[in-house]
Image (cartoon, rainbow, N blue to C red; front, side, top):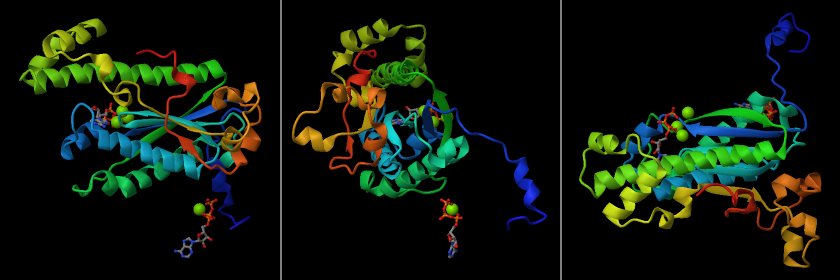
Length: 267
Ligand code: ATP
Ligand code: ATP
Ligand code: MG
Ligand code: MG
Ligand code: MG
Ligand code: MG
């Protein structure tokens, strides 16, 4: 009702328009997934079906939101990157975040039966929280992704050592925890190698590094003649014509590989 006597309540709304010309990252994280993974008996430390489900839900989100250029995920989290010149929802943080969270959650539950055909979801159903943060420079964005990937690496090394001690070493959880307290990365690598003949570096990359989805800006050119040198740069960080690319129909919308963006990240 425009101009009604109630209209004034709109002035109570908080402005949350994000700074122009900055990368917007929306990170979502599963709520209480420590419990959820136990409830549905996820394989520990890494249930590949669950990772593939996270990736499939993220891919669906990227297909529904063409302003997204990149997504990085591991464990129960995913970070979605909107292009610097994104104007979706006037860059309002709450609208961007809630749309991503609800779209992701819908697809996570919708696709669940594909990845867990033998296990029906029951309440409490999976849910995710989300937040939006602006990163002004390309280096800041790169460091953000590296930060999440370091987190993946540290957690995965710990979890791999912990669950190997429990599953193959027959240790109680408490004892395994004590064994690992105060250890650094090289100690955990050594425990895995000397006691269990596991070379951590041979663990699957999806466990050690996480997953990246990115929008392929030039699928047509790639098939015919090679693009000029500058367009071969990682699209998200140095794309020369983002607007054109974002509206272009895509033959292969999303790639599921790790582009150069993450090459000099740890492990
Ligand atoms: P919060 O609501 O605060 O996020 P949480 O229990 O979800 O609580 P996280 O720090 O997000 O806490 O941890 C996620 C948990 O889910 C970790 O224990 C992680 O090992 C587990 N997990 C996530 N994905 C998988 C997977 N694919 N396979 C096995 N375990 C997983
Ligand atoms: P936006 O994404 O900006 O919210 P929108 O299309 O959802 O776009 P709204 O202003 O939220 O726009 O309007 C919701 C639309 O859905 C209206 O056209 C409304 O009539 C229709 N709608 C919602 N609920 C019902 C319903 N139960 N039955 C029929 N139509 C409905
Ligand atoms: Mg959380
Ligand atoms: Mg969580
Ligand atoms: Mg988490
Ligand atoms: Mg609506």
